Length: 404
Image 1 (cartoon, rainbow, N blue to C red):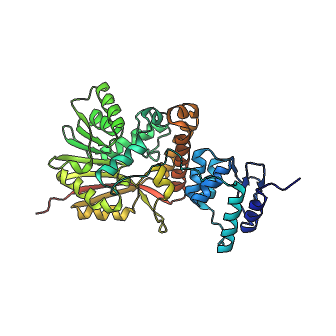
Image 2: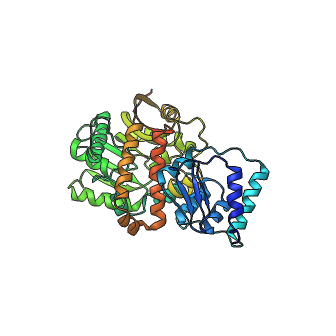
Image 3: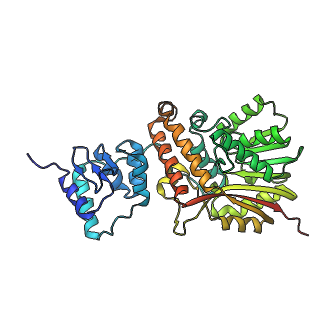
């Protein structure tokens, strides 16, 4: 029986990677075994999977193959750990060339596959108002019903607080919302800005529990539509206003307090000082700010990576906590309190993952196969970052100083 076309590829993989914490299964049944029996298997269902990897070697190519359905894995969590944590041995130029030639020969003469339809190539100047609106809608406008599959009833899409004793996701999100209100020391009748208001969970909580008037802003029209409906259903239309507007478009308005929850990650380091100035400008002297956002911890961080930038959070770039504090101080804020919630976010994501996995058929119907694969991968990758202390999340409470 003649050797399969994929035999040279199997030989080159075994030669280049003698120690492998994963197995590879090719579309013709050829298998490259792992060093451990319980290691995950990467199953290439079609030569197109190799085409994606040849076109974009590394995480982007592997991610494209998975999103397109040309690559399956036996254990998504274990496979993700391999992709994120495993360090392959250094390969000579000759070894890389042999692998590439064997992959081309195994896949046969064919045109390289196009990227999946869910991949975004953002247009325009990075972090301009138009581009920010484009990338935010790419992430948040999968559909409101899709997010409802895994979020709690309040539709809060940010870190819940379990460390105060909450046992359920619902209780932990309520604890987070109330904690922010407490840190801001909200008083009845005050005017509050909710930056990146999502589906209105904080605005609804602050208005109904603390009697404040809230302006919530988002760049996602579908979010705003649902938030407005929820405000009306709660009988809070006279206290809560939801706008589709950029944070840079609030000049001339004044607020007693600002809550920015899960929004600073979208700002970009090059705009961070401008972001802080905009929030300072809309606060009255002595006004309070609560900035709740993801921060990177790894000193080796060199950007979110091409896969994340194309599929998950285009232009998203968590910065170190120290950089956020410096931006706030430059803008005239005094930092009063900082608190980290890294383990809380890992637990939040665990709940979201379980809830989405329990509703896969509904999720597929609402979002399609490609986007569902993206989201299952994203939630796990995000949790991995918090579990391994690659990233953390902080609440920074600050006061606008009334300088002479």
